[in-house]
Image (cartoon, rainbow, N blue to C red; front, top):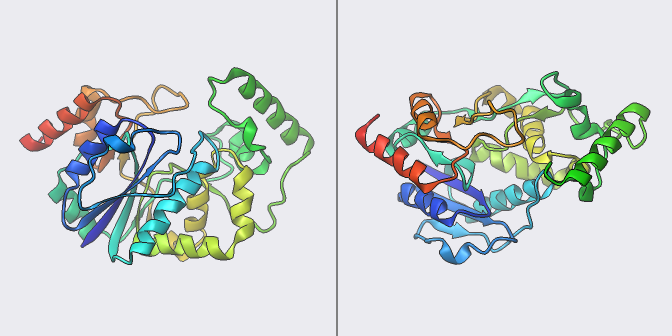
Length: 288
């Protein structure tokens, strides 16, 4: 059984090298998209199973470029013509929390799409998530919350659009929208379905170009409106701690790793220090 690890990254070459080392296996290939703004490529240790994409996209927080980077990796995997059973989309700040033999056995016996999702609108999100797809967002207005003036402009713009219906979008040809984490483990059949869908649905593709957080809706919506819906496990097998209620998940420490390893998850994020990866490897080596 072959698998592909797809890493979407922009920094922390030392951590990416740890991922490459972990997945050094004849039946596993690694595909890496490095943000166009990044200068880490010379620091990546390239093994025989490692492929760095020639296409480098300028990835911006909350924008459609996140989707474009993922699609670029999907296309690279498809172009290889290798028969992967599963493809795993991770970031450069993820790391496996089960040993490699466990991971290989788990996915050898699996037949699900491991995708995190909820249907929109949903009360768990600001504005029930309506703004994420009903509001037409010019891309320049989307930026990290720390850019205060853009945040203020974006919130005011959102409120005006939702209150007055100005620029509210035509959803007639858009399927039911689903939202969830962009990080997932799916079969190659599901990945190829996504690529085929994009080829024949330009309106769908273009619609999400001017949505906010489109990377958290684009793929879920395609999968959940297809026959693959029947094979979805609403669990992406990622240990992620959102307890701080911030825009980004908590950076995990040793105590968090203990909880992560004890869970049923396969990967953990967000990891910001190599010493945390070393702690994981030590725990896995000891079998606990």
